[in-house]
Length: 266
Image (cartoon, rainbow, N blue to C red; front, side):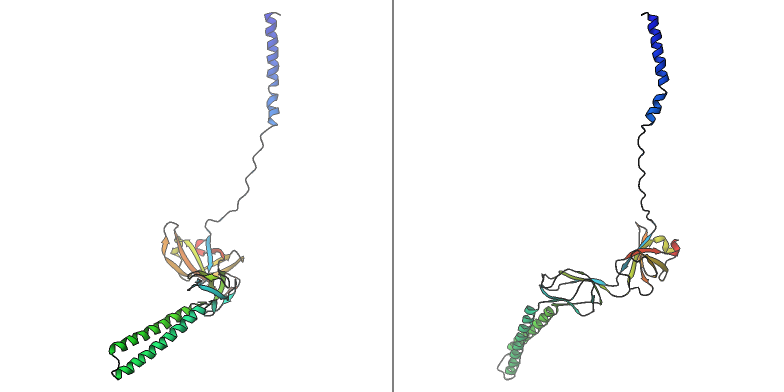
């Protein structure tokens, strides 16, 4: 084959490749990469919402004042307790025995003191004997007072009328002094606790009305500011408030929460 014929053949092959090239992108376009799925929509949270917490007027944890065994537990979850009524009672046998012993020792010391005084009147006893007998009688009286305090600690009464929110012990359980027994919250109106932006202090004052939307009930309640903290949180730029709901609402419980709506914040 001549060199000229080889050159012509190569030119024809190159021309065919150039004509076929435009079709190649059309084939590769059908194999496009899959489109990434759109991210799921997230719930929007209002950053300007003023959260409110319902708190009881009084709350406390009753603790054991003495070491002993629980003989009676007059409390159940959610039950009502009355101020002054026993909530927890301990086995008081040992404390009662100590009180009787102290009473007997005092009676003996008092009788001895009376005898020494009569003998002193007859010059049959000295002043020192009378003084020592009197001191023994006073010690006996102090022992009685101590034993009575120990007996009183065997019964734990409710400090206020309210409801039981948590029980830490069981009947017949032995506990140490200082151990938590029962947690109580007071009956009656609940107070609101909230932190508001400090810029609202321009219009806020005691008695300022606002609305509270409670999450658990889905209802709105009127309320009024009852106290304003004397210090602003310089970092968060908020101030703590306390408030009261208008009227009585039996469906509300301590620990519920919601959002406050002030007219000044709109």
